[in-house]
Amino acid sequence: MRLPTTTVLSLSALAALALTGCSNGNTTSADPTSSTAAPARQADGNAPSSAPLSSAALAERLLDESDLGEGYTRKPQRSASHDDVAVLGCPALAKLGSNAATGTDLTFPRQAKASFTYAGGSDSEVSEELYSDTAAKLSTGIGEIFDAMVSCPAYQLVSGNTVIDMSAQETAAPDLGDERWSQLLTYSVGGQRSVVKQTAIRTGNVLVIVSGSPGLVDAHLDKALAKAQTTN
Image (cartoon, rainbow, N blue to C red; front, side, top):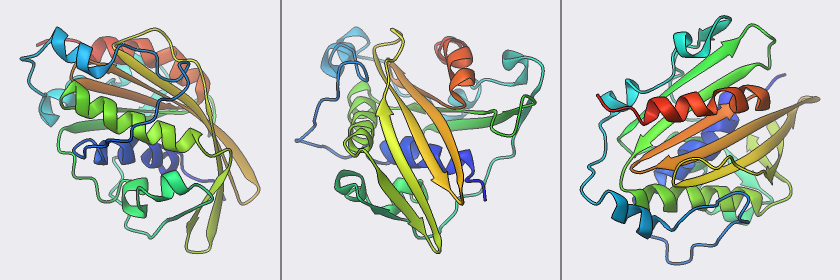
């Protein structure tokens, strides 16, 4: 049985943004290779009057097939799953709660996302998510989830009779945007093992998250950021 890439993407990306409205007085700093940027307080000063974008505006800035090139097909948007998921072996991540961890109880309103498959193979998938809020809220939310995930060398997700073995490793993020985070997620289920790369870039009041096959993430991250920064 192959675990859908979107399961892992939801765990890391959607959970982060579910927390953006919550204050956290005990924020820990990840290794500089995963988050190398000026503090959000400083970034806020660059554009103090910039209002968050609407979901509709974010949707216009998503990558599409014409941006990606030949061989890409957009996947239909999945409806939210409400299966109970438990996190075992990672207290920091379990503390966020199963609903937050799977993105099934997301209350963050300003978002847009798209997923694509590439004809190069069954594991050739790439997903983009855009979020908008104040720089401080975006920074706190995404930083907390990345810190939680890489704090555990190995953990498990359990849904019904399915047990997913997970691990997360920090990787160097490209020097883009105001803040950046990157990690490799390795998961295995039913004898199948897959690796997903996830890179998040905050530019002002927009957070860009590109996830999927490592090569595709590296190939399309610049395009995703450039399009997210366009002004209409």
